[in-house]
Image (cartoon, rainbow, N blue to C red):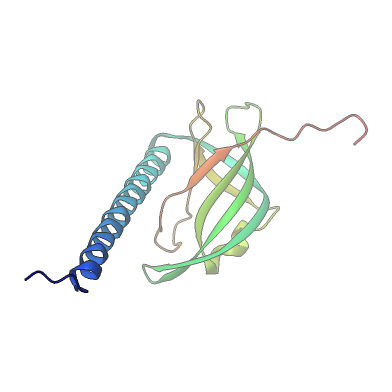
Length: 155
């Protein structure tokens, strides 16, 4: 005699399928994030080793509010607006740079300060050089060049 009543399988099977799907999607997202972080870290290391040296004036510093803790230091994720002045007398250019800065070193990146950077002249990607004795490096810099603001005749 067949019964047509409630069965635990009606709830358990869809729940397990949903959990498996959620796990797969989460793992794929984390894998992509790890790949992107590794690629940014590798690019930053290449720029620090082979990039052109330059000095950059900090035009603005905005704290994103994110904090990370690693290597015995607390890091603030900050967005820097930099005016990069290449050493070869090329025209200066502006870059927005998101980077991790040790909280104790945030005053060194205040607007008006000058910092050392290395950049790729072709793509204008850059990496911030850390001074000797600074906290161990955390994460990779992410830079995005943006056009310089054009001043109008009346300004």
